[in-house]
Length: 94
Figure: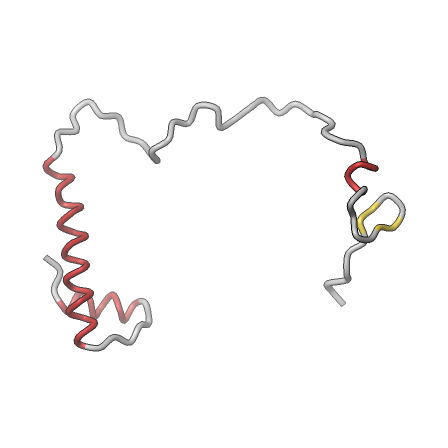
């Protein structure tokens, strides 16, 4: 599976300082994960369509139709501060 050298290389790439004890524990955990993933090779996936994620993509996109959800006055009704018909916000850039 994954040797200590791989764990040390990954730690180095991630700029992590790990002890020898942590290296051993991380190696065990990485071996467990890679062993679990290797079980996927044993599955018969003939006829299974590849997916990008576990959810269906139906309904993600709707027709772009303009709609007025509320009036400008309703949108500004709970504004802590406003100037005329606009929100007043603190200046962020000099």
